Image 1 (tube, rainbow, N blue to C red):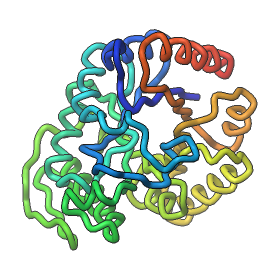
Image 2: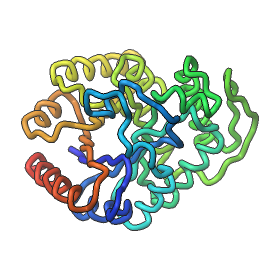
Image 3: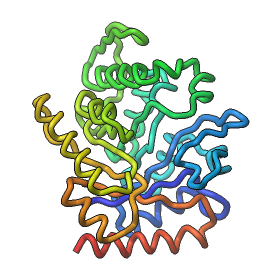
Image 4: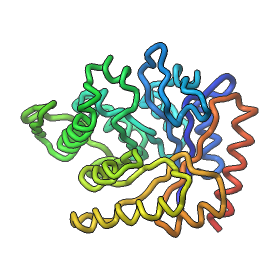
Length: 285
């Protein structure tokens, strides 16, 4: 059983580097941050991140750090903590530059990167990056496939509908071979299919229904077996901090639990982190 935490952004008197030290000190395996280059003004989408009955996005999403800069800083002040994206919006990057960024972070961290990926939900944001929302799934698939070619091949070539290149040399390669674990975000069947095709782990948000989660994990395993792939690991994102739920989820096949931390001052975040650490200790016995 592995346990991590997730924060949208460090806030006020709590720097991300300080949080990373505290998370590692308490024995957590991983720290995740999200990615938004910007939020178009007036964004009012009905999205679970709002955590309320409103559709207006919380203020914290307007001030996120670049995830790879933030995770490099977190890795620099820790020695064991795994650093992860929850999630990297792959369609909003060119795969050659993103492959270099991920490989560089994996090198600098000593092989501690967990690459959570997703297609994105904010259509205005992706349009500003030149991404057609209707093709974001294709952009995610091609971006992952192109990066995997770059990481695995000394002279990499890739040809798709959106990206194409011949015989490029991109060094350094990641420490983790053939690449850092790719955690595919999303709760639907498409995300599970993508996990089998292009990923290493499935990373759904907690569906708040353990019976449904069990069926989804069984579907994931059936897909992997049919494709001749090893059983993918499962990371449960924004997991409920509940002992009985976690035990039931472990029986269903969950391998890692990632708990949400508020974007707040130290006085708010640390007590919650301590509660999560206490739960982690109980579950690990």
